[in-house]
Length: 127
Picture 1 (cartoon, rainbow, N blue to C red):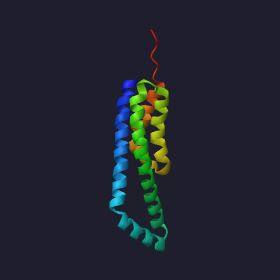
Picture 2: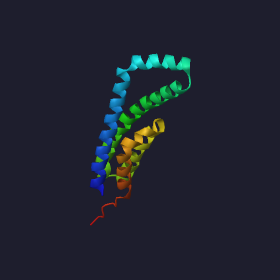
Picture 3: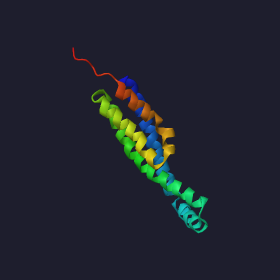
Picture 4: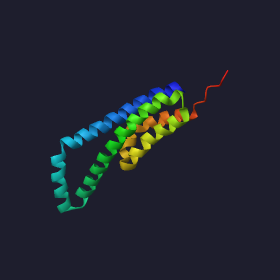
């Protein structure tokens, strides 16, 4: 069970971190366009403002995805020594970015699965 948590956790952490880096890169590359659209949506209001708010929340979520993705890599490796705290960190690494942008759960669901596997793993019995 711990091996499965390690593999699924590493895979989920790499996907989450990679997506966070991609979102940050895309935002930086298109910053001028985003700023001009923000000015236009401020004048128009309505749906444009909602789209800009969603874009900003995804940008904030990208920072959380990178930070917690790196933390999830460490937690995945530590699952053999401290499975319960590692499981909690893996679940938190999926849930906290979802507070900013719920669409991140589509990509970080593997972290939830790995966290559950780590939480239900039985400790090794001393001989």
